[in-house]
Image (cartoon, rainbow, N blue to C red):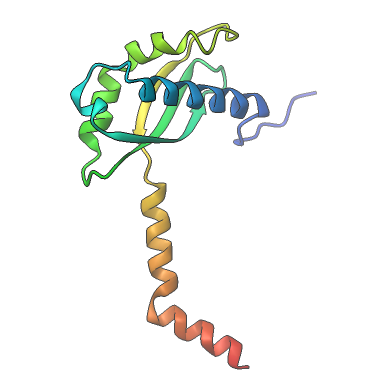
Length: 133
C-alpha cells in the first residue's frame, strides 16, 4: 500500500521549522554575526520551511525599516554557513544540521495589496449594495 502524497508539510517539518526559526532569531538577537548591515538592521524571521529530509531550512525574513531588502538578504546568505554553525548549540537533537537559506518574505506586501483591494471604492460599493438588500 502506497502512502498518499501531500504537498502540505508534515507535523515534524513544522515543529523542526519552528525550532530552527527560534534558533535563528537568537543568533541574530545576540549579534553573533559580524556584518555591519545585519548588526544595524532589525530583522523579522516570519517562517522557516524545512525540506522533507530536514536538511535544508529556508528562512523567510523581512528587514524592518528598509525600502530595499535585497542587500540584507544577500548579507544573510553570505553569512549562512556561520549562522548554521551557531545554530548547532540550540539544535543538538537534530541528526543533521540543516543548510540555511534566506529569502525575502513578500507576504506582507501581499497582505497590503489585499487590504488596498478591499478598501477600493469598487469593492466598497459592492459590499454596501449587498447589505442594502
